[in-house]
Image (cartoon, rainbow, N blue to C red; front, side, top):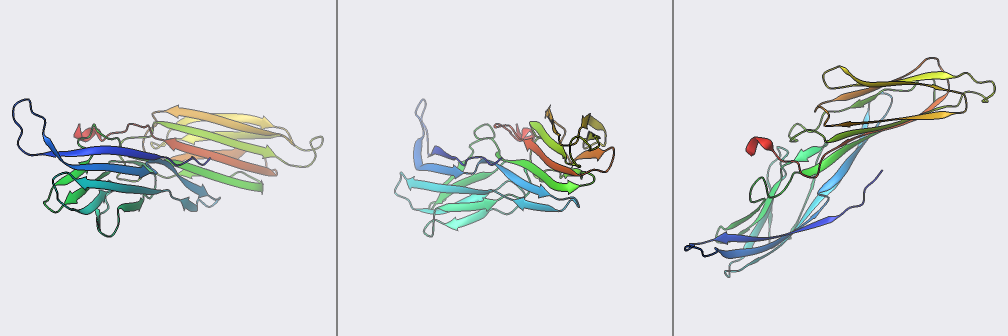
Length: 260
């Protein structure tokens, strides 16, 4: 379930100088920020031993700035908002900053341009101007011809992520492959979702005849922040295939409410 990339262009004018009554401030820098990968999913493939293979999407910010007061743009910078150091590049050496977030979550990034007079053009202007950059978490667990399905463990979001996911979506398919349908044994498959507080959030049991399959689907709005566990149990050993997908999605307008 891979998403198509998109770019966001943000025109900005840096305003400075003395302002008279009812007079608008004079702009000094005209900037367009081009964002590719501002809203994307990081993918995590789990195995039966809870080992993780991560596929992380890169954020790319292209800066297009010009001075309106005959100054020179000398630097572009990015504070990713995940606790890492600010990235700075010489404007004469390039105008693109790339960055890769680890884990998943919503990050209050800041970025901007600086001219040789010290004027700094920063985005966002305030916490209301631009929502967090999003990295949804998508977890996968696929296995074939197993006696018992494995459990899926969902890691906590990046510790510097703000807010909680907007929604959890689960699709878990179990196929009972044991023998021919007319002679194979049915199995009872139970899904049990455990939340970050260790309490049961949802459960479902389904009887699957030999040669058949069933997909359990579950959605939860405004889930608690933290790690999750999806326990999947078969009543008897059989020959099973599992395809489980677990998505933690963030909303398009997540802000750091501690600064509001």
